[in-house]
Length: 561
Image (cartoon, rainbow, N blue to C red; front, side):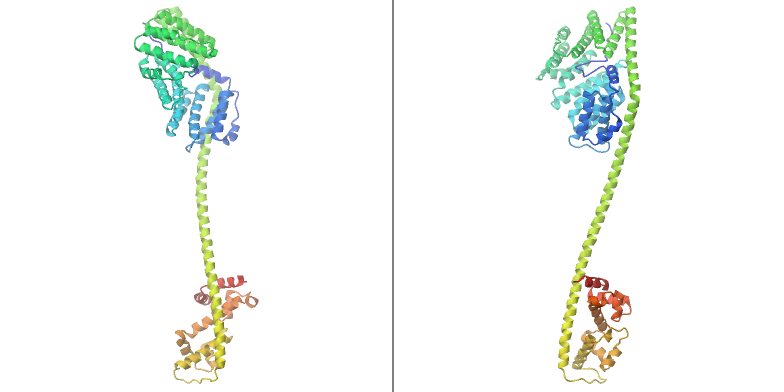
């Protein structure tokens, strides 16, 4: 039996388009691009708006370079932060679309796979399963494109596994629209590589499902499933006949119709080859050659000539084998050259994209650092404002306390003034004068002398002289200074010095309130005017008796209307 040729490509409804053909199509669109300077404007767009712009560049205007720039801006927005809400879906989809651009337009399979894997990880972490389905299909297509340029027989199990994952995800998320192309691709890969047992469970499940078929493609998927199930039970001839009789309606677009014919002949070639129907297999593969030439499908044409080379080599038709080998190598070289030319054309642009990517990541890191600095500065300012507010509050509270003490001192001064006036009236009413000796004073005499001392302190200005002493008072009153000390002590265990200090402080308070005469006096000047030679002692005694410093009291007196 002729050995089964290597499977490299299966196409369904445009999902798996010839890899090299797509690279060639890219060359026609490379001129329609937007300058990288446009990124500044794009950065101001919302993520959704920027994604719609990218899709417009990609699907409508055929400007993949501009689309790639837009997708790059989107993906780099979340380089150092996690997207929220609807942006999660947009971010994961943008990664997948970036992979598609690198795959189909730029021919960079490595970067395409990198972005597909990033998209898969993002979709799983951000819980956006609707994107996983598209990612699985994209990865399966990528594997097929990669296998088509390998020299050795590839392992198609990863492709089958990816289509099975896509099918399961489509069922789980109730996305029925992608089911038909997924099934078609899965059946084709399994049929061509004779790995049908790996797909039977999925095919059987789909065959039992009640899904409204999407026009022709739905019917085509159902027919392929039935053919595969017939093959499973050993009815291989019936399976081949069913595939041969699948109608290709004229109502579908010409290009899609031609692609379906290529797919159909490819499947029938592998099926007949497996069954040993060499003539039928050869007929179907030559039909695929003609269809691929008409459609200018370079990959399908390359595969078909390789199949022919292997076929003729096995049956020892050296002449035909050499012809087909030349055609196969020519098609393969042309495809590789197209890829290299496209790579050279895209190298500068992709280098700009790479630099842009690095710059945006650097800017993102700088923005993150700036945000941290801003947070630290904001916290510092908040703490500073809180401290200022606390200080202001304490100052106002202290000011109110000082005001209360000031008002209380005023009340005390007024009350004392009233008491002094009353004492003067009582003193004038007394007719007798007391004579004093050297004996100890009795209580009545001490009280009378104290009244005389207090009256003197209230009325004499001499007490505000720095040189005034108890001896001078005794001299002026004509009594023994010891009696004066005894009388003052009897008042409340108070010394002459402390009593004199009280009167001087009260006078200092009065003078601070006298704006006409003492407005320009300093605290030290006021202290000296009432007999204090030491400023510290004056300040200390003033605060002890009034609760306020002389400066605070003087300030309140000036502010008082």
